[in-house]
Image (cartoon, rainbow, N blue to C red):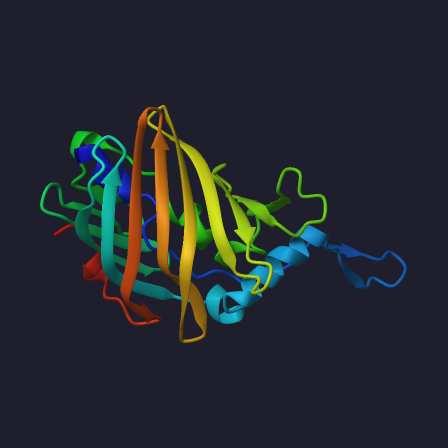
Length: 248
């Protein structure tokens, strides 16, 4: 059962790092030295998605705190296990807590080092390089936006790949332009892991739109776990003291 609660930490909540304003690739005209913005349908779609989630307010968000409940259901043990979660993010720093009666989990990144009480020395990938946090990086250098395979009309969604090679495929709600779901694949300690999310409900806080209720599935070989998350309190751009990002 310990592995269940470790896996849940991978994409719970969101991690949002402050980044530079949106930029598009630029080319210069030799004749007049005028800068010409080079764009593409998939880049336009990604920028429209960023705008739907709050635009500059989402892009420039400096901190996010989310607390709520989560029901965990391992495929091998089809019974919901109630738990609560706390996520606190400020820039590149984060603190995550999953409180449950069987195996409480904490992981903290102070901007330099990662501290965790997860058993077995389990290492997570950078959680701000997967899932919805990548939307905040649209337009940033080395975060590559490409079309989804088979999406010839550039309408279904897009992929964002981080400089480290982590990627997430996003699908969109045609009516709202918001993210309706995403999938991500990566390797942890030589094990391939895939996760998928279906967003049931969004919430707008201080002009920023983030998931309030969503279902997540984790697949690790023959091991699968499901989780239903529900945010109860969301705080945006609140001052976070540095001592929050110490392991205690």
